[in-house]
Amino acid sequence: MRAVLLTASRRKSVRRVVEHAPISRQVVRRFVAGASIEDAVRATRGLVESGLWVSLDHLGEDTTEIAQAKATTEAYLTLLEQLVESGLATKTEVSVKLSAVGQALDRLLSVENASRICAAAKAAGTTVTVDMEDHTTTDSTLDIVRELRADFPSVGAVLQSYLHRTEADCQDFAGTGSRVRLCKGAYNEPESVAYQRREDVDDSYRRCLRVLLEGYGYPMIATHDPALVEAAESLIEEVGRADDTFEFQMLYGIRPDEQQRLARGGRTVRVYVPYGDEWYEYLMRRLAERPANVKFFLRALASRD
Image (cartoon, rainbow, N blue to C red; front, side, top):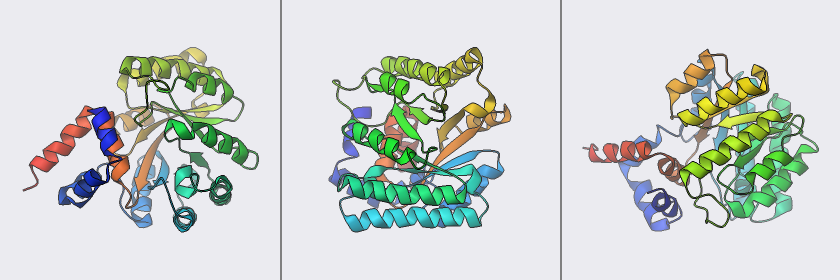
């Protein structure tokens, strides 16, 4: 099912059907804050007031036009202005996909656009995490993160435990001050570069998390898996990590009760909140991650009348 959904995320014919089904947008509201910056700010305010932190993602990837890359950059700049005006910036970072700001078009363009967003985030009193995409972009993305950190040391990187290479990447990025979001990964990757069995991905996650927690950076533990949350708590206690030297991260609309439980226990919990019209590929990856999400979607379709 996961492979089917991830393949469907790239099929234009399937995309047209899903995007134009009236029920789809109703289901999307569970996972996406809305289409506009106002929607994003509204969702952020609610989460912050409930004791959570936020990472906002302006949806869009695989940009094929320079004008589109510039428009995405400007959208982030406007978003950051709105966060400052709303008094939410200090608890809200932004997540940026380099493909959305021109990575596939021109490396220099993507660095320039990402740097503008980083500068605006710094002025707003917050920071940026550079999202990771499929394995073909991993080297380029990590190289750009290193370049951005020369001027903006707090820029976050994302590493995906389903890739064979990630434990070594964790060693490279576990240095002082390095912010690293560790997630499982949500793209359809070949066996040559990625673990295929869930058990192997989870084992890799535990190994990678240990590297990060034993290092000198700031691990961002991105998982909804109860077993991995429990493993993380045990490792945190074993290593002796102070509460302000790591955080948990979870997706908007997924396990909100667990988010609150962790926050009430004194943990910093950041919610990844996507917004915008380009929600299709994001939705398909969320459905692929958990069978419960697929059941939720199918129940909504069945009850559309």
